[in-house]
Image (tube, rainbow, N blue to C red):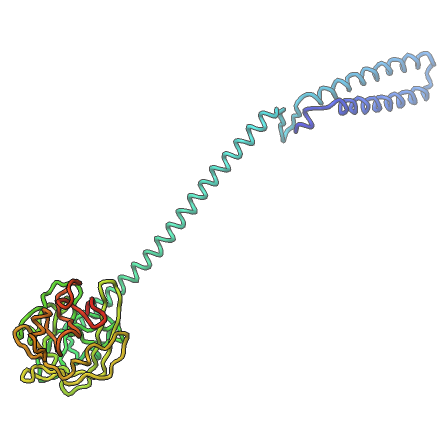
Length: 344
């Protein structure tokens, strides 16, 4: 645009030269025409002279028009070009850049919104799946409320919780806690301690019948434990975690205790494996001792009273899973040989 409106000296000179050439051609044409005429020479000279004057005027007028056209804005039916200064062009460029930046910001906002919408869709899908799972669990719970299983091995769900159990049809059913997630599941929990909310320093009758809450800290009871293990292939699993978070386990392939007349003697205990040191095999053949029923082999006193617990003590000092829930003192606490502080 500027090339047309802002003419240089060379371009103006080019217009003048072209105009002059056009005038010369016209002069030549007039001259040739006048020589062919049959009129008198004087008259012809007058005519030629007049036409020469006209040609000169035409040259002047043409030059003036060309100069005017070179200096004035070009106007047409389809476009209208205006003279622009450098400052005006720079302002227009700045305005265009500003508009582009605004559009870029809007696009960025749209992109962020799309990402948020995508995340919301994912969350909605997960919530939908969670609702489906909860509905299934609810149906399972309703289905198992009145369902009685022979043992935890018969429970078809991989969910650790309370179930109704009846190992022997001649015995009354009871509610037990089944561990269905660890060690392939199918384990009936007989003792559980984890926060010290239940006092385990109790008498013989409490340990015979059991105490605590099945979904909290509890002892299942010696009488029930006797019935569960009598003349049956039963495995025993011990899990330990100390106050520092160190974990270990021990498993026995055979486990059985006698009845009350036998002081719930530990009849069978063999086939040990695990990450803990075997601190329980030494108690095989020992009777159960509580604070009010001393059946251990310690000659210097009742191990249950000395260690504030209850167990199949040999001569004290090997293991005390039912001792006080604390990490202070030497023996008056929960301990397993070489693993003094733990929750079982």
